[in-house]
Amino acid sequence: MFLSWTQTNLTRMIRIGTRKSALALWQANQVKDKLDQLGATTILVPVESKGDQNLTDPLYRMGIQGIFTKTLDAALIDKKIDIAVHSLKDVPTVLAKGIEISAVLERGANKDVIVYPLKKNQDKIIATGSLRRKAQWLRKYPEYKVENIRGNINKRLEKLEHSLWSGAIFAKAGIERLGLSGLNYDNLDWMISAPGQGVIGIASLISNNEIKPYLNKINCEKTKLCAKIERTFLNTLEGGCTAPIGAHSRIENDTLFFKGGLFSLDGKDAITLDDQISLNQSKDFGLKAAKRILNQGGISLLKKIKYQM
Image (cartoon, rainbow, N blue to C red; front, side, top):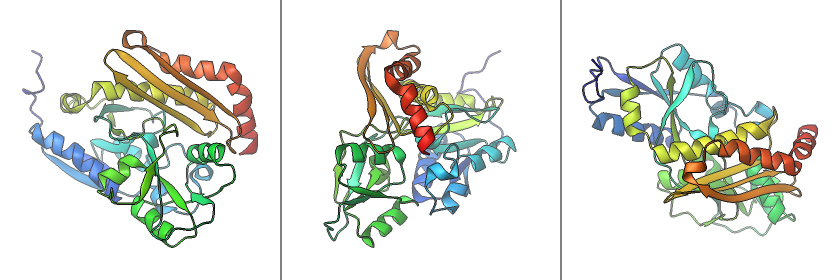
């Protein structure tokens, strides 16, 4: 006899692994609340990642792939937690063996924003720890200097106020989720966001069938499809090196809209794609979109980026 999710008897607590930052805890609590509403018993298990401990080195020098997820991956594999909650943009496109993204919540804001300090500075300097943001900013504003910034949102905001920077770039979703909308900022509508930006992803062991009925119930299918397309696009382009890559997809009625781009480190070179396709023809679209970028000069650009890193 097959049991529906309402009939499943979960005999133990669901342990929710999360990073310790305020934003990570906010996201984990969103998942916790949804699972609690389904009748599950849950507890948060905060852990600290290497990415949180090292706040000086740029991410690309630390080995950006999985820097924020490895500790939680290990906790999943060791069965110290049942699920791990992530900002999906931080999750590698190739997951550790035995782990899957089991569910995603409905997407929040995907855009980037530039936040200005209270005391305006005239120096043309902006701060970001993202190669993608740096490349796109320099492409539009080549006269600027870009400095590295690391840390959680509150730490970066504090650094901004004590700097000579004219602004720092943040994800709008993080600003909104922490209730910081009173900041002085502008939306960067022209900037292509990171694959998975604004999406809360839930990872678990593929073998953990006991919790899957609960995760299936809180999963947003539209967001999961969009995230899959963006992450496939990223995975196909990465080619073993870190590169400034942006991708965003959205669904309106029966149409999928997609924007993607590959940028040189200084922003001078860019190969972008802006397309739409019927939703019923979207299978393998992320792969096909990446191949179009590669065929339009992306292979040479990736070699150039790898040489410069």
